[in-house]
Length: 466
Image 1: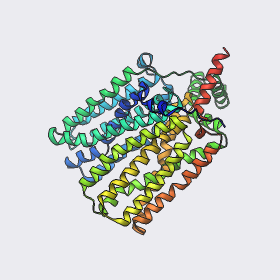
Image 2: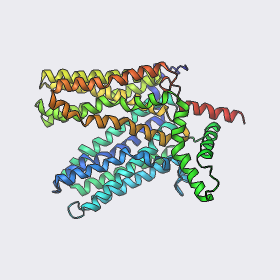
Image 3: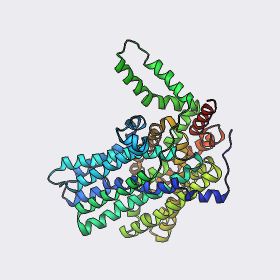
Image 4: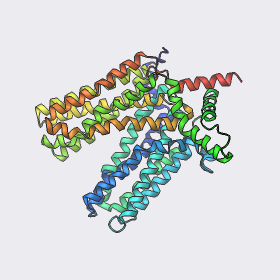
């Protein structure tokens, strides 16, 4: 089993001075900014506009766009944009297009009255969500391809920091602006803030897209096998071949590279976040039932939680550089389970602001730590030939099962109590710990034997062979 390259502590910490890592702060901000503007912030605007709760509930379906982005990720992976791709390259052109779409959609929302033109307003919100999800697909691919796997933890940490800052501006910031200037001006300013991402895209360099010879040969074999019917008209056959290369081959490539471990890896991805997502579904009702005020919850969970998340993500990025992906990821999985046990303890203690601060600090720190290591792990699983499609698949899978399970959280609380619920949520994380331990002991991407590293080595061999 190949061992991760170890770096000194100094080398691990100064990774945050790399320009590629610093750029992720601004790109993460551009990714996080539109998210709440089509969710909780938008719900507040609609409520103040007198829109019925039923219609506001329907607006939440806009968020489904983020969960199905894998459907058009192959287009982002393969289709060049006329003019833009020649100028900026494949990844930067799609990021810029997404950012322009977000800004245009936010401007449209700002100048459409949701009471008079509810349908048109909903289409504008859907456009923002679609453009935002498209930006996410291209940005994830850019983040993975621009720098080596050992730095993906730091890239993830900086992305998380920028993303959380973006959601803070789009949440509290937009509410402040709306209170003083009105919703039209608030959303207009939010649209203008997308210039941060656009400027960054224009300044950063495009990643290298050198693809190994073996990958192209494997893809050609799959295309010949699935589209080999000579009776098809030439244009239709070319379209079928493109579809197979863009949509089918990313999946066959993943299973071919990982063999018998592929199912285990996908199961691990689907279960890793089940504990924190399940717990989060009942977090606010829990705070309310314990008697915490809105101000107390906002100060502790939003402000203190924000900074503790950044600290945890930053440490996670450093440890991935220092020790590789495997051990920090396993430690993060254990930490997330243990912090849920702290919530069970708080349920026994009751209303205690100090205890709330301790629990939220631990939970936010462990969540940031685990997330940065997990994003680094998902990044290491991708093949450079299919980065956008494969990462979109992984990121969709990592929330699918947890969100389904989280839907039953209220039933558990109603049938028992909060102590039992948090013990249950902690127990849900045990399979992820076991799978992390198993994968760490195998010759798998968790041990830094990633598909992307293999692809890089393959490219080097092809280049050295002429």
